[in-house]
Each structure stands twice: as C-alpha cells, then as structure tokens.
Amino acid sequence: MDASTLDRSTRQSRSRLHLTVATALGTEIVGGHLAVGDLIPAEPELCSRFGVSRTVVREAVKLLASKGLLRTGSGIGTWVLPTAEWNFLDPDIFNWIQESDDADAILQHLFAFRSAVEPAAAAEAARRATLEQLYALEAALEVMSQAKADFAKWIEGDVAFHTALYVASNNLFMAPLANLFRQYFQMSFKLSSSNFHHQHCLQEHRDVFEAIRARDPDRAHKAVQVLLQHADEDVRAVLGKD
Image 1 (cartoon, rainbow, N blue to C red):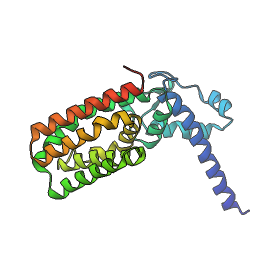
Image 2 (image 1 turned 180 degrees about the vertical axis):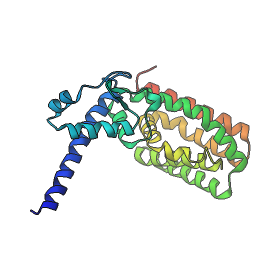
Image 3 (image 1 turned 60 degrees about the horizontal axis):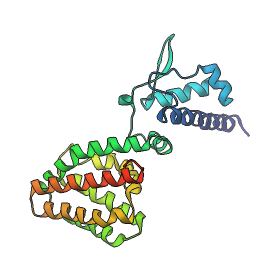
C-alpha cells in the first residue's frame, strides 16, 4: 500500500469515527439526556469513552455545531444550544428525533405549524391554482383512493397531496414548505395511518380538493382545518394521549 492510499484510508477511518461520536452525542442531545445549557463532557472524557483521539472528538463537535446543537466558548467549554438554534430540517437531526422518546412532541409542533399555515395555503390555492396544479391534487387523491390498506401507498399519496396543495398556493414562501418538511410529513402520516384514520380522512381530503376546485377560499380554509384537527386527534390516539 503506497503512502497516498494509506493516508486516504486513515482519513476515511477518522471520518467514520467522528460520525460515530457525533451520532452518539446528537442522539443524547435530541433525546434530552444532555439538556439545553448543559456542558458536554470534556475532551479527555469523550476520548476515553469512545476510544478516539482529540482530533476525532473536535471534528464531531464541529459537525454538531454546524447543525446548531452545540457552541464552544474559550475557557468555558461546549454547551447545548436552545432548540430555536437547531436545524430541524437536517437529515441527521431528523433521524435522531425519530429514534428519540420526544418524537411525539415534535409532531405536535408540526401540527401547530401546519394549523397556522396550511389552511391559508389552501385558501390561496382556491384563488390561484392552475389547471395543471388541480390535476396534481386530483392525481394524489386518486393514489390515496386506490391505496385502501396499503399504508405505504397511502402515505405516498398523502404526502403528494399536501405537497401539491402548498405548490398550488403559488406563493413564493408557502410553495417550498411541503418539500422542506416532507420527512416530517411522512413520519406524521405513517403514525396516523390506520383503518380508523382512513374512514374519515379520505373524504376530508376530497372536501379540500373540491373546495379548491370550486374556487372557494373560505371553504378550502375550513376543510383543511377539519382535516388537520382530526389528523391530530388520530395521532394523539395512536400515541395514547387521549
């Protein structure tokens, strides 16, 4: 093995190690085992715990800092930042949330966000949706209609429907939201998918579509409010909150 190959192998090995350390610490932070404001263990302790060098620890901390989880201060140490600083759209943070005990709380934040924005997006869609965008909504609704007990297919259609709804608003700030939150939508829809949920949910999606197609903003706004309220109730029931 020549020197360049050995050097590349060493860098790859160190990269894997720092990702392992970052994942362990990130999971502890997102799961609340390291609370906001807590100092993380000092470098020597982390080196001993993970059996890695200071360089690996520093790279792991740097990675977590780039995601908004940590900040380092000279002479102070490294501490956990408030959740307002966290990049919840980061794929790693999303994965750590899914594995944590706090996923249901995150979903409640998602429902609060959607309840504030999605009815307005539907009203805008009723005013501004193009014919092509109406076809996209209808196509997603058809996927949901054909899915029956195929929950994977249902989720695919559900995500497509809500994505199409935001896009159909033709608002420069609303339209990208569904793509940004796609992973969280999938997590939420996966949790709520059940035969009980389908009994009312499909009709509620049809009501939203018909209101948008009828160019009735008020009706579309109210239809989304009903849909989200019932979806929230279903998720709470699944989580044993009711």
